[in-house]
Image: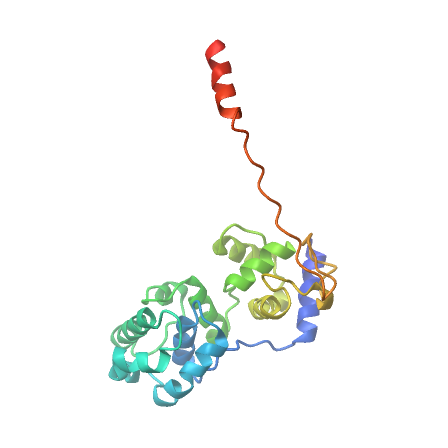
Length: 240
């Protein structure tokens, strides 16, 4: 996409949702950090169900440490990888108490130094809690960035760099929210719903599904290598 197309892409998404927000439920910055940490390989809906009672009891890192790993597991056992996540949440809470006065730091470096906090989680916290223009690339944004041609890249970091370079100023703060929601509800992984996509004409995806009853185009089978190709090349090499 060129600059004008990218501007129009986000203008339309913003027109449909002027004030996008994360779908994770939280009451303060610490709870946001915990919720995003728990959301890895889990749905926001599932995380919200698990944290509803938890966040009524726990508002600070110190309170989480008191709750303990076993106590936390009882609240989040419906979430995938809950054992490892409980261990990380308790560990990061202990570090917040010990090294940050119980406050969530506002730098990428400090956040990613916490157990279980990767670049994506840190960027979500920086954007939602501190109002920074960051781009948290999850599976939805990675797919949308590549599929539409907005910010193609082979890794999440590459897509993040592309977005940081290409997203124009008026839309930088809300960009990752619009892209996540677009990927979650319209530009779906198995069957993108192009028939009601507001930016379909700007998208470079070749296999667009413009009919709700249509099926995704089957993947092209890989060409089989000739069994004689290898030996033939070797034989030729010996005669030269």
